[in-house]
Image 1 (tube, rainbow, N blue to C red):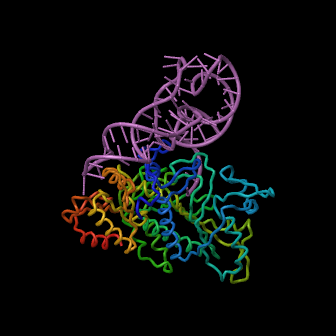
Image 2: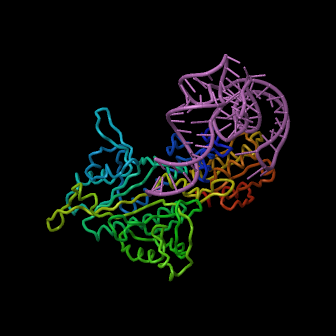
Image 3: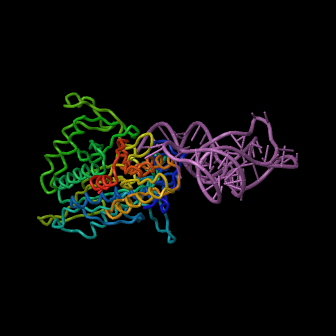
Length: 440
RNA sequence: CGGGUUAUAGCGCAGUUUGGUAGCGCAUCCGUCUGGGGGACGGAAGGUCGCAGGUUCAAAUCCUGCUAACCCGACCA
């Protein structure tokens, strides 16, 4: 993509509505634009990141055996009256009436709707286990939206719902999601830590929050430093194998959010106890028959008995992750995208558009990248050099290929790695090699 | 939902105390120069001063009401 053909509305100054880094950087780099409090339009750069996060999430969900569907944003009130959450949810729920005065709502979550789909279509244990998920916009009328897309009112979320014949089987479904979450967050270039979370009225230990570490996180978190080495535990795992032992191993290390923190339990941990701040990017929990009972979602077991199905739900904050990833990956000059979610793989910067040689070499590299299906943003504008380089740092793609008049004279060009800020000098041929080795 | 703050050009701001020609920087457009870290000079365009009332010869400025947005708390993926 040539920058002169693209839509990238950058901001030089800090927008006054933004306070935290990720919000400032998202607005400055033209990723999104606020429409109302906590509601955003996604501009091209932001949309690309959103799509990448969504794809990584879906791929891992599919790998775990979950099946994608799509439920609507608008839901009928009846289902929520059935589960008795229509009252319980309070003002956070955006309620709507259509022209026939029918009561509707903009869904803040989908337990009721999925339970309705399930009970209308599944009656036998033979169809279980089942895990259905979708990625859809949600709306929660937060009292105070803040932190840009990390705490918006409208947000994109992946939510999955599992159905099982028994508590034991439900735990297996839960374990699959636990593993899937560890893997998918890691694939986004993050270091997730699963932490015991509050389970609410159900009890038991079947609820975990997935936290990424960040100074600007909303809540205090405590964990055993050794957990950082445990990330690879799930890398080569077979979803059909016994996941319990892996999870037992992982959860034997201490990790808790502020609400769950108990200093007494940290006395004998193996590594150092880390106290820091975290951002919740995922949450999984088993809630058994909480919705299947009142909504009469029953299945017939082997013995011919009808019983309410055992359910769990599993959320990934897709739009929140865009902000979260930036919180975890930036410096004073801008964003530092992990390769996996970067909107483009590299910036190609032509420092002097009036220099024919520069243009020729830049075009060669541009065409090469396009042929190799490498997503490159070619800065072919007539901006000043400083402006171009500053912009490249701000939007923060993994690599910057810099073509200048000095370089064309000596066949000596530069590639800057954004993460390390290290610049290496390469001939044109070596540039092609570098691209092949690092960007394909 | 309590407490605080803000609203003036596309963006960031001054001007409001003490009423009297609508300002600055960046961005934009035209031109010339420049060319390795937001470059320089010259010119141009851009406004219902959040909205509605009121006071006054005269309101961005004073008064009343409303709205929107942000920050701190309590609450959430």
